[in-house]
Structure formats: C-alpha cells, structure tokens
Length: 119
Image (cartoon, rainbow, N blue to C red):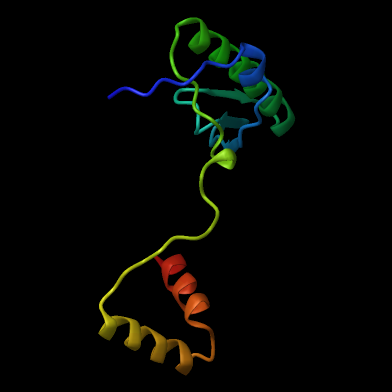
C-alpha cells in the first residue's frame, strides 16, 4: 500500500530552517554542509562567507530537487523526536540498573542518559 502526501508549494520548503555544520578546512577557510539535504554543501574563506554560500546552495538544492519531483527531507529539528522512548528489558537488568543508579545517587533516568551518552 502506498501512502501519498500532498506536496506543499516550493515556498514552504524554501522557508524551512536547516541546521548547518561548519567544518574548518585544513588548507584554510570553512566547509558548510546541511546534513539533512544529501550533497548540499559549500565553502567560504570565513565563517560568514561559508554561511552565506550554504544558504545559496540550500536554495538551489531545494529548487532543483522540487523541480525534479523528488522528496525534500524536513529538517531534523521538525522530526518526531521528543526525547522520550519506551524501552523493555528483563526484570533482572532493570533491577541491576536501578541499584547502580542508587549507588551513584542519581535517578534511574539520569543514570541511563549518562550511560547512553558515554556510547
């Protein structure tokens, strides 16, 4: 079964704000990329120039992708993530983790977040 969604006007996609990653280039300047838009990257001699250039690249990437009839990914900041998820585990493991959290004088939630962050 295929579920189709109505395509929004190009202005909607052009108005979206995507996180930009700036990477110092070892030979000088900066590379800017938008990880949510595959292949959308640019560069500049300064951070400001790289950010201006990535905005132009984002606009061109979006217009070209839209004209080709391809899907435009939404920014990850608009995703379904809210910082919560349900995790099922064996009772014995749950008890062990709870004891470890108590020994560390933190909540089980805080303990699990710190353990996950270590990975």
